[in-house]
Image (cartoon, rainbow, N blue to C red; front, side, top):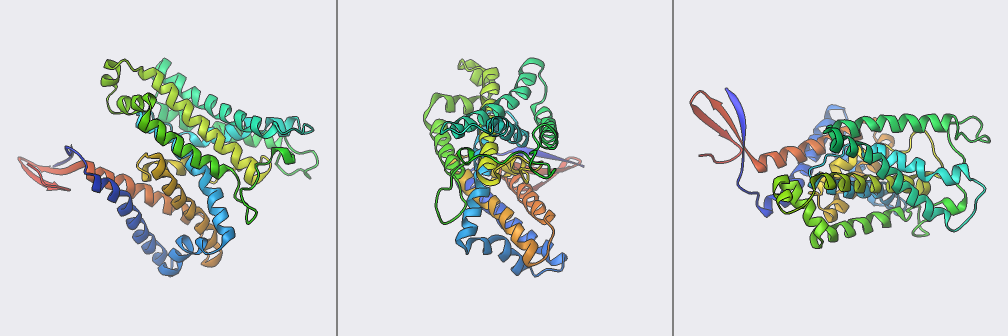
Amino acid sequence: MRIELERRPRMSGLFAVVSPLLALALTVIFGGIMFALLGKDPVEALFSFFIEPLLEVWSLHELAIKAAPLILIGVGLSVAYRSNNWNIGAEGQFTVGAITGSILPVVFYEWHSPLLLPLMLVMGMLGGALYAAIPALLKTRFNTNEILTSLMLVYIAQLFLDWLVRGAWRDPAGYNFPQSRSFVTEGVLPEMLSSGRAHWGFAFAILAAVGVWFMMRYTLKGFQVVVLGQSERAGRFAGFSSRGMVWFSMLFSGALAGLAGISEVSGSIGHLQPSISPGYGFTAIIVAFLGRLNPLGIIGSGLVLALTYLGGEGAQLSIGVSDKVTRVFQGLLLFFVLSCDTLIHYKVRVLVGKGRVLFGGAGR
């Protein structure tokens, strides 16, 4: 007996829309079962996760803060994934973007200028792009798998950040705490509204999503991404460079991850510290797939995943669960997104001798 997957001829537009909604519903159902097994009221727990954070103005601002890096990174990853380049190391590019963007306010802390913040944002994007260039170089030069190299580089970036804030960049007036100097006022990303902490990083995320949607839909570069992602041979026949696309997609996704990193540090934290992310770079992978690799869909999926972060923090206080529950919730969501997509794209057949038993659709 063996199991095989047979690709369906096409996926209907209805199933393309229903798949992420079904995955979300299954996550809620199995999440409720998980809370029941933990001895918690499932209704109260799900209310704490998905409804309570939407009831106060301040929590809506916090939702925007957490959604901003998820949307920015997810939009960049959507371009990489649609071109069939699997950048899994956005968390490292996020971290390096935060480091390079912080060079000016940390090293040249006496410099006060209106140019400071724009330069920080540009340097953050450059840092993320250059860090993503490492797996791009290894893939194009040595045919190395970019999944492995980009992932391993995450831990190098995190350890480098930890070394910096405990050593060369540690604040001499910080009572020996592992953090850098606080950014000067000119280096802080301003708030969008006076009613809360939400900063302009959220606006950057929305603009990036709209801009990338336009690029993918109406420009030659977007057409190249789609063609090379679906068939590298067809792309080469059309005169498109697959190596060039590796560089473009990796640098582009790395730049947006770097922008997310410096926006997070400048807008929400105000200095560098050993931990600047709860795993935004990894969660953004879920965001990208839940949004169907569509930049506009990623806005909605980014808000949903941000809600799990914010709701998870509230649930720790209101019902007394661990922060690991949030990670399990997000893992369930990714599992069901990929599972639903697999069953929509493929027929699952169980072969027993010469007979066939079909699961997941009508067979021949």
